View 1 (cartoon, one colour):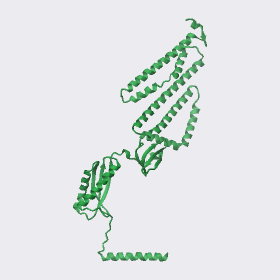
View 2: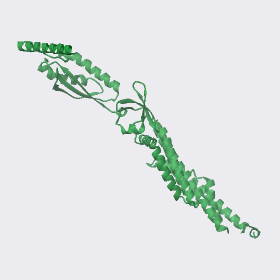
View 3: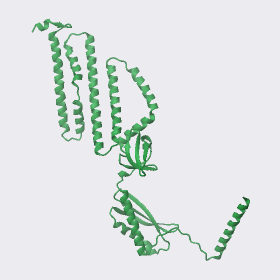
View 4: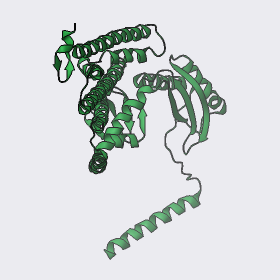
Length: 377
């Protein structure tokens, strides 16, 4: 085997070149085996049903993304160490290996972002949170942009480029761009806030200030509602989060307060029995539990009663059906008991002659004032 030492290439014998090649191949084989073993082990842990199984699954997905052609440069760097080469060659090989390793880190980071975005999108689809898809695309874009910007800056620094001025320029440029598109960025981050915090989702019925409708779409800049009258309402995401939003889709029960009045001529015994009548009516209705019923106040034309009951379902149509049943039952029971509902009235006492005289004088004064105004005009 001495003849291997007799032939030289670039001041290194064939024996040295074969040794370098063997080390490179061996390192690649070890890395490939390690990738497979680590990925399988992490995958097995993820299937054990632990509370952090998704973390191990994401790590397994990341390790499977190890690129052999990038690891080749790392292995080649170690293989060249057995050769006698100029210092510049070692320096170039080291920088290339560092760049390859940084690019591999970028690939791992990309797969991590993709895994968690896809995982969240799948869960949002199962929960019928259709509005998350668009915003998740924005999160994916922003995340990958930041990741690869950091990788690129690190690569430039590793190969000897002074990135101080570049970073300063990017900072100034970033501030200028942020000021120019601050409204768009505000709506974008508001969209991300809606997706993460979930004050409402697609399909929810919400009321925003004086507007009401069903959420149809949550976009990067706007959220769209379908109003009850049919038209589409479009809100900027930042304005929407700044308003008070009533989400009726998440209502579990509905508290109902309604009032009615009866005539002042109603006898005391019948008046005292009205709350019991209301209780009997509500006890016979499903999904409605009486909270209270009281003689509330003396109105301008009636004895006023106030009743509060709790609907056990948030459905509005069910509430209206119950309220209608209560109203019809009250009309029937009051008719049977001889109780009359009140209506606006005014009583004038004509038994006093002085009162009649005062009314006549007031009428004459109004007529005289009207005649004077007409003549003046």
